[in-house]
Length: 144
Image (cartoon, rainbow, N blue to C red):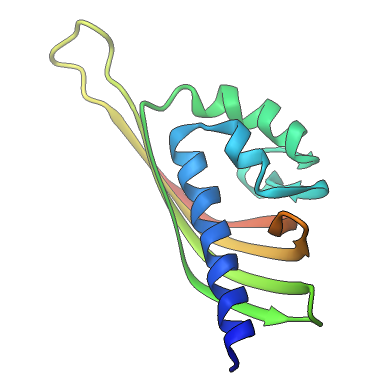
């Protein structure tokens, strides 16, 4: 592995962390900037949408608003370069989200939702660096 490939791998991993942290903070501007303008995302296995990042945000923003805490992590990232400017990525993710208890009810306990699965991605090198051009989620389980 040469320095150029190591640099590309680092930049791609930074992109995935930026995606996860933007999702955690519900920072939809930063989240959307992780994708190319013509990107396609598919969150249908989680009950979401398939379409553009803007269409995904239209679903994600109100859905994620019910949670007062989100922890989204990615692991086991496998990057397979397909030429100098494209790579396929397989990774695993897990997410923990919390719905707060009823306001003012000291006996109300929050509800925690855990989900895990895989992402199948394609990233491309752009003038702005590596960006996601395709993301498909395959959910393995959800637990409440």
